[in-house]
Length: 339
Image 1 (tube, helix red, strand yellow):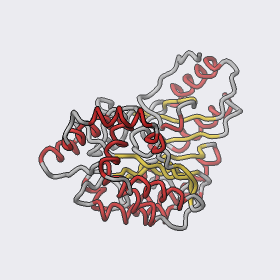
Image 2: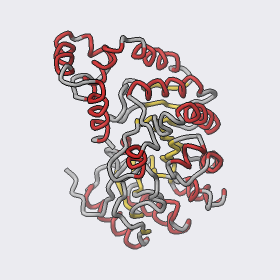
Image 3: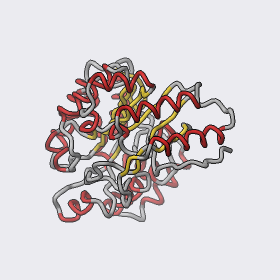
Image 4: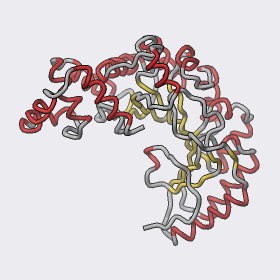
């Protein structure tokens, strides 16, 4: 067990569960997205290089010679730091942990664009080689509605600059982010932007609006209509069908997603992924609801779990206590737990 005698932030990407976490900023410089609560109550600040270096040395002592091959820089946006300071931090990390193979960070498009191409190359050469980019949607209408504060053009240009600097790009997109009102444009424009970026990884998340967010208030007031679980899977089908010309890993790894078995590589596994989605959508409505309930309540992990008759019967019996509206509310509450 590693004793963490150094400051750590509130979140990290699922992929970085076993990574060294070094906090170089606190909070998010934007922190206005209508769907996000991750940095509520956290005032944004850039930590000093000396403070970060002390944490790096404390982490080195805590790991006590254990080899470390991955490090994630917290919190929301490392590119707010001056280039020379960020490089100094990266060099200190590589010196303290020479076994590091990947140093990663969130990367916000508008902040990344403040770095020149030469600065991006210097940062990449210093060791920052993987970025997690919350694209969320490729639609300007959707991005404006949820107050993302970026444009599709800035997302494309910033990720292009990062790739030119030798950095891998992991893109997040959120199913249902346009609501029923913008689901078609969200699907089409998201697939178009993903195809233009050709990221290293594509990660899918499913929307849950949490109390306290602007999106939740919009939904309560009738200005945003949440997609059902089935509608989000239909949206994912449209997005995946339209993604073209990429060499990317594709995954629904996060527990907030319904079909976590949707994992593979594009283009070689695209048809298999589509078949899995179509398998779910071809089920009778009662069977679809059975799977959703079983998945959200912990009886099922994957579609094939429905074949276990005892589990299926248990789920079917429990579902009889709810009407359709109550079930959708239950499913949304279950998703909220993972956001």
